[in-house]
Image 1 (cartoon, rainbow, N blue to C red):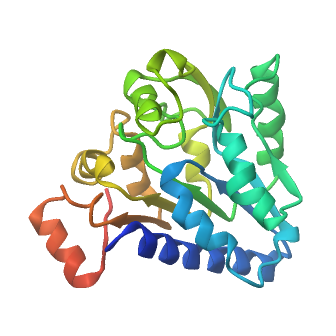
Image 2 (image 1 turned 135 degrees about the vertical axis):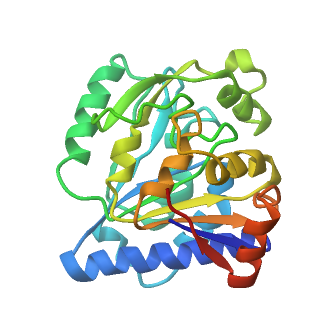
Length: 261
């Protein structure tokens, strides 16, 4: 796993978009189509803006999968991740084939089965992720399930995760935040050929320190990214601010550092 730090979220987003474009174009060149997993939310805005403004990408040959979604939240709600996915990526690029997690439908389990079947039909070229304030990836809150092989699972959200959504102003109060969600599983995320995690902002600094300076553990879900051979985590100065002086020194000198188990 590779760790990179940039001065601010704008330069971080641009650099991550350049790597994402390279991964997509490589897949298009090698196989004629690309399959991607896309995260949404405030932390991904600069990255997705830079990605969608990049010229000369054959978006018509790209297939996109949704990372996670609340159960019981309509797509019209400002906190709906599938609504954000449509706004931040699908409509801007014209990607014709995409798979939304309809958590507001009558049968979430059927949604899980249907989208899991589509996801499992071929390899994923690149996955775009964020990391939550509690260290989650997708909606895999601690203690995350590191063992299930199911592509998508139904999860119960912890209080820290739900409070983060209030802090990002998607919801008025924690009582408005759904308690359950559909999430791509940890092991499914790790099956992607390449992973890009985009994690700006000082509020993510405690999670970043825990993820990269503690043991790999379900209690710190994003720590599992250190086991992936082709994962890159993009930080800005704020999100990297609590990393140990020794690690920060390496990053500042080298602009990146490789972390393993």
